[in-house]
Every structure is written in C-alpha cells, then in structure tokens.
Length: 381
Image (cartoon, rainbow, N blue to C red):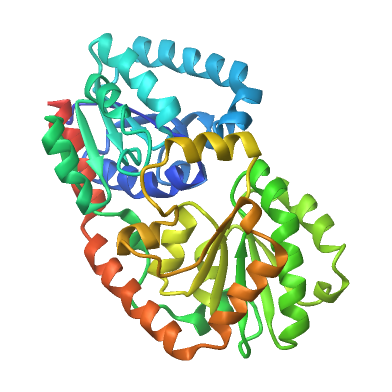
C-alpha cells in the first residue's frame, strides 16, 4: 500500500506555472497518492494539481505596482500560511516569486515545515543581501543556471543545479513552418512575434510603445506580419484597443490567446518585454530586441539595487550584450523599430546570435523535472 503524502506549491506567476507543471507530473508518476495543493495555474491544474488559489491572484510585478495590491497580497499570504500549517505538508515548494515566497517559507520553516525554493532569486544581479533571508527560509534551493552553484556553496546553503525546465520543453531545432500551421498563420513571409508581458501593468506600460514601433516596422516592411500571444484573455480588449489606433496594422496582426511558444517558434524575430520570455526566445534561437517600461519610481529603485549591466537573460548567460536592451526612456517607437529592422537587414548577425543561443540551450539542458522531484523527496525524508 502506498503512503499518502501532501506537497504544497506556490507558483507566483505564469512562468512559475509553466516551470512547475512538469514537476507535478513527475511527482505524481512516482507517487500517485501524493496530494499536490496550493497556488498554481492552468498547466499545473492539468497535471493533477489542486488549486487553493489561481496563479493570476499573485501576478504583480514592480515595487510601486505591488504597493497598490499590498493589502490583498498580505491577506492572501496570511491565509496561505495558516492553511499550510494546518495541513502539515511533507514539503512546501515556493516557485520563484521571492518577495512573496521567501517570507512565507521562513514562517513555515519556523513551524517545522520543510521548505524548497525552486528558481533562485537573481541575487547575482541585484539585492544580494537576500542571501541571509534565503539561509533562514529554505532547506534546499534549486538552481536553474549553472553559475549560481558557487554562490550558494560559498554561503553554506544547500542547493542543487537542476537545469532549466524550458531547455527540455523547447526543441533544439525549432520548426517555424509547423508552428505557423498550428496557429493557422500565413506560411510565407517574415513574422515578428511581439510579447508585451503577462501582466496588466506590463501591457499598460509596454503596449503603446511596442505597438507604435510595430506600425513603423509595417510601413518600412510591407510584407512583415505580426503575431501577439496574450497570456491572459482578459488582456485582449486593451491590446485590441491600442491596435485599433494604428490603421496600418489592421489586417497584419494575429492575436493569439496563450500559445506563446508556438508564436516564438513561428517567428523570425522577436520584440519582447524583459523576463522569462527573453530566455524562451533564445531557446527558440530567435534574434530579439528586449525592451521594458515601468513606473519611474520602480525603475529607479531597481536601478539603485542593480549589480550587473544587463537585464535580459540571454545577455546575462552570454556575459555580453548579444541582443539589444532598450529600457525606460530608451524604449521609444523609433529605437525599437530601428533595432528590429537592424536584425532584418543583417543575415550574418542573425546567424551568429543563433549559434550563441544553441550553446546556451545546451548548457541549460538537464532532466529538470526528475532532479526537482529528487530534491523534494530527499527533503521530505
């Protein structure tokens, strides 16, 4: 007879849902009687997860933006803490979302509940002081980038490099034609994938600039088409409203609910908001322009706490600026469109960056779901 166990997960945003779903599948494959509960998204639910709350309830980014939602987030964290303590899972797994999860993990660990954190905060990039809180909060940190291991070894914190789940999900050789067929897009011609971000705040800040840049590109490249994946269908009306202001885009943009990977694979070039999507674009070997806009106060705070010169994961992993980064006031319709068109006109540059992306892909490829499940079961014992 198999012993029933309970594992609690909190994935704080859409990317956490994507990263955790294969782990849920692997855990339930090994131990079918395991009860996986907590905060998750549609992919985790499809894998057999029981949600107490949906991931969209935590999807807030940036200091100023969080302040507006702080009372609700604190109430949610308190409710989760009480529910986890009452249910006494063998392990609590916080997935990314360090501002929310590390404090919760510290409280739960103080109550004798073992904790695992999946995806280290970017302490190598900014807010390095978090290492002291991590030491108090986690029994095991799971690392998705190989260079992070030295940091945790030096701090005496138990940590394991598990590779990046996306490196297993995304094929080494993308199939643009197959992706266009799945999306029912035109098979011929150039396609620019435009990813504004997965949150309402990101769409509000990035949308007008990105869409104005699309209009400029459309005017210079009459054959260029555009595809825009929308992480949450609730964001579609505001995107459509912004697009309606650009008449040149009226028949040249396909908006897709979800399917961001298909959109990236189908594309030739990507215009993308900074975040996990930049790594996804790199793994699909797509030349990209990274851009991001946020409230001025949030940007100032992040700049003050920054420790490295890059924000895009492809540049961080390459340790040099291999794709453009245009942030805040540097992100204008003119600069974004020019940077995209530079990729269009330079075949040799596209080939060079594609080769670098293949190297990055290989370095991140591990049996991540198995390694994460191994760590969870080890901590549980």
